[in-house]
Amino acid sequence: MEKINTDRFLVREEIRLSQEETFEDFGASKKDLKEELKDIRKKLGEFQDTLYAHGKYGVLVCLQGMDTAGKDSLIREVFKDFNVRGVVVYSFKVPTTLERKHDYLWRHYIALPERGKFSVFNRTHYENVLVTKVHPEYIMGENLPGIESVDDIDKDFWEKRYQQINEFEQHVAENGTIIFKFFLNLSKNQQRHRLLRRIELKQKNWKFSPGDLEERKLWEKYQACYEEAINKTSTEHAPWYVIPADSKKGARVIVASIMLEALKKYKDIEEPELDDEIKANLETFKQELEKES
Image (cartoon, rainbow, N blue to C red):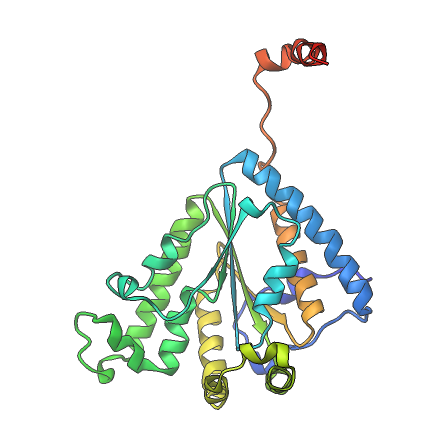
């Protein structure tokens, strides 16, 4: 399988989602993609062990995409070889009553990874400039000062939110959180096929909701909101990657490759050395244990 150029998916300058690719399998068979992912995720799992022992960094993985983009299965497959105590997945739904009593970033802040661990956000703090921008009436539920009606939610309001999100990410990055942000770029036609599959396959029925079709009618609005959010918040400390998502196996390999390549650049992440006194007495400890047998 050809070497993946991960920089190809990194957002360095303003993009147009309509011009971004939605399919990539590198000309490889499904079997080859599966084997490639297996190799990469094993290395990621080993890295997580070292990350935990080192204890100075946490890793935040943010996944965004339209319904059926493959977020759930990507999480399942990419993180399969992790120590289960080393990765925590958060799926952010409609805010609870408690969450609404705080600012919109609160529930995300308390879900940030501990040092030595990965946190995966399945849908993220970006929902606050995506679904709420498509449905601005949702903002009214936040009970914000100065927002008495939807008419008060203007361009300046959204610009302020982009600024707040950038500052939030910069703050956590400067305090030891390595941030990855992946947009799974699914084509509208492929979403149609996946929604039909949810209807046609009995074991997939539970995933289908009529609301999916209502949101699909707003496809263009969502694409415009994603495009603006990505362009305004892809930074050096928290870059966006636009991942072709029509091939689930291809998308998984790309995401895993990007993470492994970026994390390997942190040369200071290594297992700590044993205390000199303990190291000097390892043979003694070994002999003590061997005597027991």
